[in-house]
Image 1: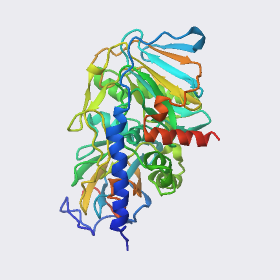
Image 2: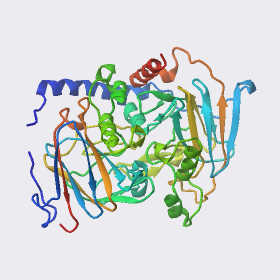
Image 3: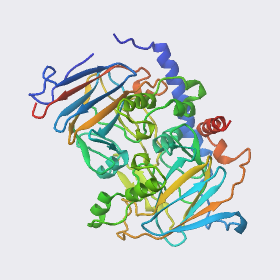
Image 4: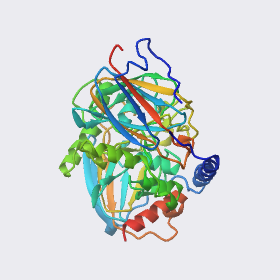
Length: 272
Length: 216
């Protein structure tokens, strides 16, 4: 026999949820600064650890240490870039987009937001972002999506790129989490259908992701399945790894929302 | 509790080949053979049922929420949805849905994410990811094998401006979904124990799973 909870217990939990919901939906977005201006500021030469230009169709990965920043920039024309990440110390902890969107009450990431792992910890802070045009839902291309779009087999695609990257890292396809697509302005209409909101892009956008733990990050530069451009070979994307800087105590991403603050408390506890 | 609604004259509550009562908050798994039809019933209403599928012959092929959303070009799941695998193959098709809206963007609750969402005081509450880990471990898998799942009967509207929130479920007692298997699949369920948001009406309840043979 199943025993129901009492009306008092239910009412107390509902009241607390509605308080979280109100703050998450109404207060948090107002606390965020909007888009980073373009062009991106020039980086000091001695702050650059490495710069990689990922050709259209290709994958790349890099280690990144806590407090280092990855600048991902479109310096030779428009492209979208898919991203997955694992905790270096325990690769079973990885980027988790369902938690990222659910915990922040939005599928729209932008400056001031964070990206969570599956363990309630922050992996990245989005410290700069000129577009706010990223896809947390649909992911990257696959062999099937490329064939549907371009009518042929064999074109490079994000799924296969991540299978290769994961395997070379000693992982395998079971370890590939749902992928974040940067510079892919996917939104959901009132009926639940996806659409491509190209107005959000400038073609020269950039985003800076500060690492909040030591990670391995893999990228795939293939056209997003919804990208209306029929060309199957996108422009190259530049990833610049920038030396670590300790964030200030009033750092935007660490203080913008109650959820981010609790996530960083989990990071701090895990680092003890 | 159960108000059984027939979707085919030949499928009755007595000729099901599997009939499972799943207690509130519990994990569950079973194999559904190609051609069989599985019904997942929200017996009391407003109960999120977190669900994953694996190819029964090769668990490395598993449910992919991103492939499923991409193939249908839409975020929510209902009748006609092809449940897609990580290898781009159709695992099951949803053939009936008395509720009309199911989520596959918001994932499963966990002790860890609960601390972020609802405060550190909610850490020691049972959660779906613990259910999933317990259940997939019975089949030789681990946490790395738990991808983003389907949340049957969970109502998570996403606005055109990208805001997203979990609101009261719209399922009534006895509401069901039915899926026809296109390959042999291992189905893994967490009957969601969450009491901090409306996905279960703040009151988790038992569910029922029925399986019929093809043409039944």
